[in-house]
Image (tube, rainbow, N blue to C red; front, side, top):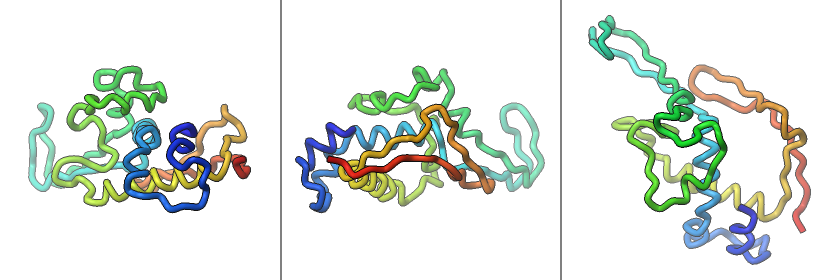
Length: 166
């Protein structure tokens, strides 16, 4: 990641990120996608508005279904080595997750209309931060502490050490 950032910005810590820069930050985008796969930030639910039969079961109207995104994103039927952090899986030009197996921004009719803008913002923020600062976890073995309000999953504590980059 740092090699990619350094090769694009050539040590210039001040200039703005251009559209061409963004399209060159392929590994940074792969890291964002892999983090989102391993640690999804959204929970999705759906309701039935009438009695329905789903997966061989009859469900009454107004049943809420909670979609277990973590289980889908970590299922070895869909992902090779799903519990391994591997941004390189996203670097293969021919790689495309099976339909409905990567649902960071929802799917189908409810696909987030701002997903591309969100990706641009996160990748650019990542490049801006890491081209200027060295950022390390204080304790590599400490689990990430999260909480959920039922929809969003938020990090409540992640201790890092930040130093200016030389």
